[in-house]
Each structure stands twice: as structure tokens, then as C-alpha cells.
Amino acid sequence: MKFSFLTYQFCRFGLEHSFKMAQEYGFEGVEVWGGRPHAYAHDMGKEEIQAILGWKKQYGVEISMFTPEILAYPYSLTSSMEKERRETIEYLLKSVETAARLGTDKMQITAKHPGYGVKRETVWGYLEEGTSILCRRAGELGVDIILESLSPSEGNTITCVDDILQLQERVNSPALCAMIDMVPPFIANEPYSDYLERLGASMKYVHICNGDGATEFHMQLDDRDGVIPVTDFFRILKRY
Image (cartoon, rainbow, N blue to C red; front, side):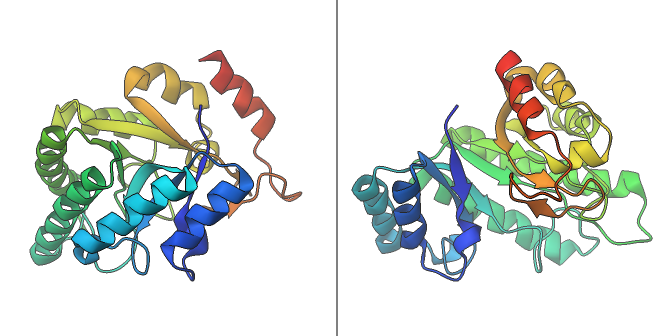
């Protein structure tokens, strides 16, 4: 296992600052946030890509995953607006190409809340269509699409391991993989071992954090108000 951190934590700094901090604190990688001012896909020309590749070499820090911003406006794979879904797919295709150019084999996606008054099967149809298009391109580039489940306040489509497995079955692409973020399974009273056992080799990434047990709020591991048994989680990882 190798440790990295999401560069969004330093979103008010330029991206190079995250590489410096990773080196200083002994991290082996950074998960590059695909938003401004870090690595928004539509900003990533040849010069910008070369700068990031240079920081990788200069600081001895790899890019563990590329994480485009699709939890916030204006992108969503589950939107009822056809134009928003089309622009999201275009953005994610550009993002997966950016991930490949940056030399990482992983890109994260999520399915944010689609809004109220929409039938679940309709939303699933949107998500399956968009994810299928993305996975075809990702497969050509050798990039795994890493699907993260969300807490119910963030989204109501992919919230548990069964949802991940269902989308994998519907998309039917080896490029569609998965991860654990420690907060959603804990809120859902879902064993972390379910992710590791049932997802098997497609479970490729972990977001480690603490939480309050009720909301999507992500806490530091040593926060005294955190209720997630972090030490036990590491025992589970070790077991698998």
C-alpha cells in the first residue's frame, strides 16, 4: 500500500505546492484534483502537462489518481438536463485523456444527487450511458475508472457496494473499478469487508478519513469527535 493525498486540500495554492508538501511529509503520491487552479482538463495544454510531469520528477512524487470535479456545478452524469449530461461526458473524456497524459492509470468518478422528482430507473439509464462511453475511451488509454460511493446527502444513486456492482454489471467493462471512502459505508452500516470481498480485484483505491457517523463530513484521523474505528479498518485492509 502506498499513501497519497488529494491536492484539493491545497486548492488555494498552485499545484506545485502539493508536490512540495508530499515530499516534505513523506507521501509517495498525490491525487491530483482536476479543478482550477490545479489541473482542470480544459486548461491542460502541452506546457501545463510538461510542468506537472516535471514536478513528479523533481519531487519524486507519483500521481496516484486524477480526480475531475463532478460533485459540484456544472457537471453531472445523472442530470435531467441533456445538455449538462452531454457536456459532462465531453469533460470526462477530456479528463481521462489528461489522466493518461499525466502518467496515472486511475481516474475517479461519482454520481451526484440527480435532483428530486426523477424516476430512479431514468437516472440509472443516464448513468449507465455516460459511464459506458467513458469506459470505452478509458479502456483504450489503459486508465481505470474508479467509482466512489457517496453518502445519501451527496447522492442517492451509488451509495453502497450493491450499487457499484449493479453499475459494473450494466456497463460490463473491465475499466470500471471501485474504491472505498471510509465515510459512506459507515453511515450505511455496511461492512468494509463487503467492498473488499465482493468487488475483488476491481477494488483498487481507498480514501482514509474519520467521520461523525451521521453526515458526509470528513475529519482528520485523530479528531476526537470522530467515531470511525480507524485502527480496525487497517486490520481489515491487512487481512485482505
